Length: 242
Image (cartoon, rainbow, N blue to C red):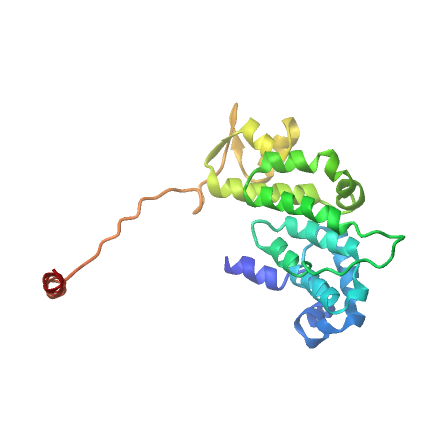
């Protein structure tokens, strides 16, 4: 957990320039928003992720409504989906609830229409309803997200599958192939290769997940030691209150 927190605070791929913008007073300088937006698109193209840098963009949009770019916001939310079960998506939502209205009638703001759909995707991931997630993601209602956004987000679907893998690793010691296939939206050889990359072995109908601290159920025996003087005080107090 400490390692995950450290990586979240300071991703190893973050440059010194971005570190100065995120950690220093310059994070509130609106002239730097272009640098942070370029960094976001670098994340999209390279399958990297930096939540704090993306939150800095949303904070600048809050303070400077004229800088607001709805496409940037949608991309930030899509990257946050891949961080589940961490609370990145909700952190982003908290900064865009009072989003400005796009004043340009020639470029309508897509966010009001897409935000409920993205929120539904997040809820399904958070609830580990993975088959329902893929059904919604592949549906006609999310066609605009797939064609305009996730198609540009390198490795988006694979990143979601890694979210699923973390949940499976923490929950199962053995899982049926058909069930896992519905969780990760893969079948046949692609499913076998996915499981192999996770280090999971297989038999005719199941994948076997190696033991780890999260998927092992161990009985815990709790013993309490009460000394006689303490017990005498409890009995005496009980007698007085009757």
